[in-house]
Length: 479
Image (tube, rainbow, N blue to C red):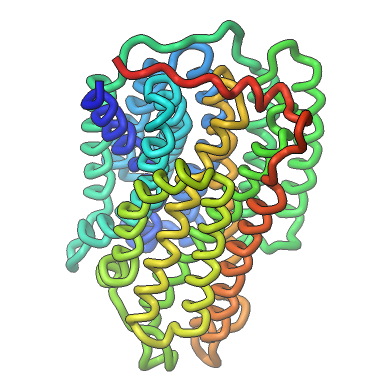
């Protein structure tokens, strides 16, 4: 039984790693793709945007389908789509085909909430926090591995972006096989049906929200397209709430969605996703700034930036994940989340004050990596304690989307900051813009402390809601 639990956790952690690996692997090679396909930088930015939008639409829907029709078949189906998306991307010789492949890869984001729902069904309560922490920790680890592997696979003068997607296709096939073998066939199913109107309105709202966030720096933040999308997103959000209040079995139970532990855990997810992507992107840009031209930076190649400046923090996430699980078991998710915010604030503050030398940049990245890993360990435990089993998949899906929204905001904010003030006669940001960006990251981590300490404070005796009390049943054991 113990061995089955370990193999299940390992298989699901490997599958979850692919989620952020797919999201970040294309970031370092956008320029290479633009050159090879003879496309503009603006057009090629859709390579990352298409993945993001597909994730927003399908993650909550597939989480709900896992709750209704079984986690294992849904998870295997999502992994199969990830394989197809990777192969299509690897074979693409035009931007249109590549965007189709990347959108299919975006569906893989649903792997994470489905993996957590499987753990909740099959792992004993005494080991659940640790297992969830390991699977969650691979999200941060996978993001770093995506950047590092891309740097390694595209080094040299004859770099080919296709090999990056073949690499992901191979990993997806391995994850599919491991999941098919390790996940028990029996799975709890719950009566109900897919709320199609709710899925369409929620998906439309998320697309209209994320589209201007991801493209705002290109379109202009006050352009008609950007403001129009935001206005339409508000309309669809209202329509989604009205729809969910009227249908008998909604996609997202709004009482669960606004339940205090779930609401503030999702807020923390947004803040942590924001901080993680801001750190990844900021350090990557900073390390590649040519010092001779700008007076700061390290003039690193993509490969060196990934391996020397980002990989240590990525490895720290992997090491910290099981430690975070142990801390959740001892201290509770609320205090581990607060600790992650404190550690992250220290890491970003260090980075803001000392980023003119390699050592503090690397070490502060390690500190931030530990903070992110602790947060990823805490959030699934908080969600599991806040929702009943039959809402586990969709609840973790919404939490996953909150991190995706945060990552998009992080990308948009740092891009806006780094293009806001340029050096004279150079298209490079002033050093103070990096300092400002890192202080913004520190602020996001500090806000996480407030969300944990104030937003997640225990309810008064006798004030426990039905949503919370229905989540206390222990999961079944493996085997």
